Amino acid sequence: MNTARLIAAAIFALAGFFGAPPAARAHAFLDHAAPAVGSTVPNPPPVIHLWFTQELEPAFSWVTVSDKSGASVSDGPAAIDPSNKMEMTVKLKPLPAGTYTVKWHALSVDTHTTEGDFTFQVKKG
Image (cartoon, rainbow, N blue to C red):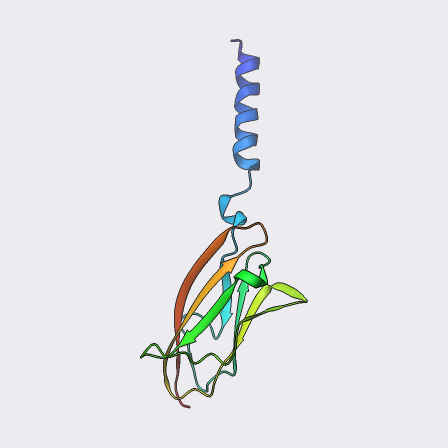
């Protein structure tokens, strides 16, 4: 193979490698939340907001919030914001001071699922 063909093949291979979208973009990962992951908030939030990296399928995405004993403190099912399908919320019951666990499951509109969990603390209830 001559030098020109080798250079062309190398350029083509590198363009394919660098031009390919990362696999992570094919899934809806948690981008950020309010309260923030691992944060301590002074007062109990009435709602948990989760923002994802892709639009979610509402029928198969959910979030629950539980106290240290595992009891649910969610006040109803999770909802996807119709004007921003990358945001999922869940209302909360009144919370006393303590540590809470947020568990989420997301199905992106391209049918890939992800899930995870995080905690936050409330200083006073």
